[in-house]
Image 1 (cartoon, rainbow, N blue to C red):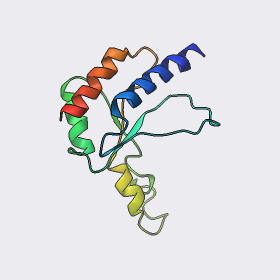
Image 2: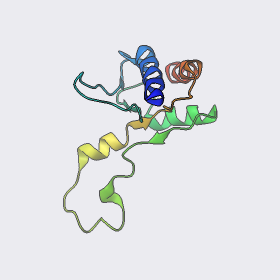
Image 3: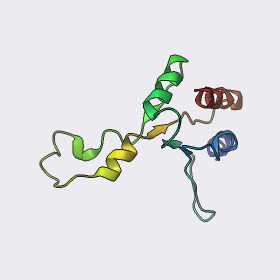
Image 4: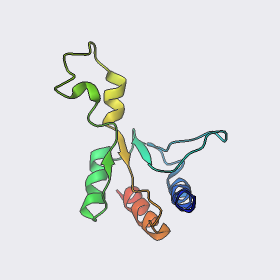
Length: 121
């Protein structure tokens, strides 16, 4: 569809600007997968700022992001007693993932601004 094609261009711009940056991990997809480019979850692990610090900087500039996999399902009150055991890997990832804006009408110049803010921190 046209919307998926536009979102793909936005995704590729993010990849162009953020790929290979130490402490930032972008999702990757194999060529045999069909991806709809609906979300862009980015892992901030070992980056110079935490996920929450990056989120605040973007928010201070009017850019909305979302914490991804947050909170964990087993942290909801209704599920706390249903599941046994800790999930330390899931917990760690849930504290590092930020979903960046990705939609068909997002201008590539806006992606550049978002990436500049992330890289400038």
